[in-house]
Length: 267
Image (cartoon, rainbow, N blue to C red; front, side, top):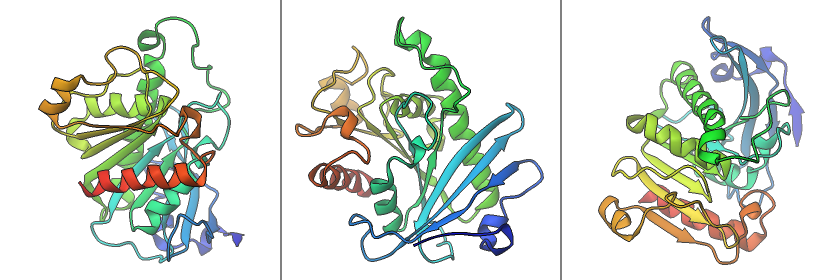
């Protein structure tokens, strides 16, 4: 069941994010999911748009949580970052199988829309680590702004154990963010990022699921010695292509990805 809500009917936690330093355009939607991958509890979804006044940039986000309007103290936060989709709207809603499952497990899940229709397209030519770097930096700035906003509006959430998950170009953004702000991230999980090297570090903890059909650029993945030194986890998925790491995945692929991600989160 889907129903639209007026602002006056929003739960207090949603209305509380309207604070002076930030401007929001709120388009809330409540979804009671029948998703096979959201066990036992329906999932509540709010969509809203943050406005970063310094960059004059709107940042659409979706918040997924278990359908009890009360936040749990020290609830852990997961931020999802979608793969590149030619600046299409609503790309941030394309990982609902994972977002809903994790929300049903009582994580506070936020999915960010990184590209806007008015943005320049991601460069297809040139050295990716050079020509795409500004796009990753913009994504990292989006992540930072969302974290700062949530800290202000939801101070009871557990930001000491923040997990970032990113697919493809979104994984490149999260890898960059983890390098820039290592103390802000507890776990980094990439889904087949191919261009930005994974951090070689003990903190945050680094995990990556790899597709069956794409090869990352040289230096993106750690070698055997680095995996051992930094306790990095790399898992190959022989039956999952790069473009299947989203809602396009089959039932088998979804279950396999969820199983590994849950293991990473509990590690």
